[in-house]
View 1 (cartoon, rainbow, N blue to C red):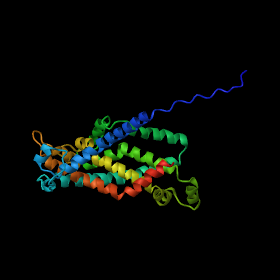
View 2 (cartoon, rainbow, N blue to C red; view 1 turned 90 degrees about the vertical axis):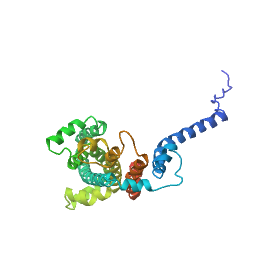
View 3 (cartoon, helix red, strand yellow; view 1 turned 30 degrees about the horizontal axis):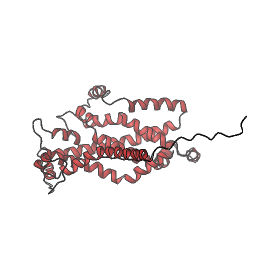
View 4 (cartoon, rainbow, N blue to C red; view 1 turned 60 degrees about the horizontal axis):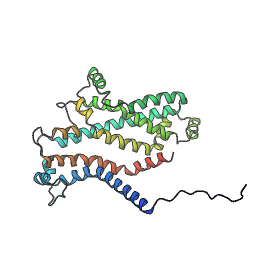
Length: 292
């Protein structure tokens, strides 16, 4: 047997030019993806401050000179689409979220104290609420609301939001955060004589504040941007939110794009302001969930 050792074969390093082209390809792909996400926002902002002729001539050009006449015209519409839509959307979002948050948190806390097998079965049922497309259950939802005499009403719209996939999302978020709460805290409060309702209200809910901010922001944006449920549950003649108001502002034969972009910019002001107000708690909720 020869004592000479065979040197291990090392895979040849990729050429430097190949690595450089790969890096450039990644940068170009990332730039195109960012452009695809940013371009609608850019078009909405710049066209909200341009005249109709400027928009038709070059939609992507910056507003030179800028004008606020579109915003003034949108607020002065005789049908008050912006004012009525913003008010109805705000009421729908606030009431829906205020109902979903305590209901989802209490249900998640109750599930956390049940046996693991029962908890998995119930969570599997809630998972169906996230996986089934809303369009599939729209017709049964309308039938139930008609039976309850809640069709074409904001109470029916809010009830459909509470009973739909939004509650499932809240339950999953709260269930994930509840796993990080030590059981000793709950046991100590129980030994001190605190009831389940008092433990949930004074101990669990303050600890779930980042999860509550995450649920509130996501659900507010989803309900605010929802078009299908308001359009079919309220009906075109019985009320409108800001999304259905945008749909009504698009004419059948001609469209005033300047005023339409003004309405779109005003419709985006409220959710952006809400996100900025809860941004700190939202980031804390995401980072806390990522470290579990």
